[in-house]
Image (tube, rainbow, N blue to C red; front, side, top):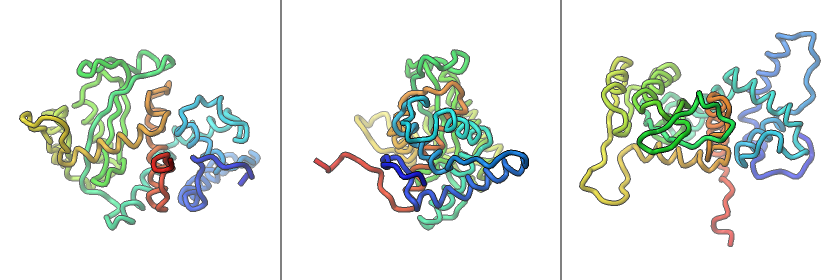
Length: 279
């Protein structure tokens, strides 16, 4: 690895060991498809560190510090891993490891789904954003599905104008394709008959968890708190506090990157650096 002063977002040796085999196999497969090409000299670990830096700090690509590889190189790798499903594959494999470490089966049987509407930046195409009528927000809607530990299983990003049911249906399709073992899902009251009926057709029992209208103030709701906590986790990444991505697939990739970062820390028992308790 290049000798430089480390950033707080850098991968430790233990965390890199979890990611390295997948990225090395990706590079070998690419070289095998182009046997006349010269092997790249850039370090994959430094590329991933740069991607984590962007994800954590929220900076534009061209503002990457100069001790990383050039922003054009980093973005080229990021785009290839996004389009070829590498981030998705890493998230899937690491989720299995994290579940096994917690004493669970690698394949979950239950999930929790929810959505989050976020504002978009000025570079986001108008065709990929919309207005969430309920929340009065112009932007995009993130749908995520987690297991009962809060680990992200599926992500779908779309215009904020799309209904909860429509997002829920797509999440259920993603879940059944990637995790055919899932038979139970909990959701909030935004997901109604269409999502419930679609889930039944897939063999997934969708249970709506409602808030008691007589209850005043904050109250933790069964199962729903798990996915809401996961949405809170990803919002710690400044790149995700607003949607800056031109492509919705990039928005999904940034969520997967945040999840990969959290999963590697969970597996290696490394805490997220925090300012709390230091003063």
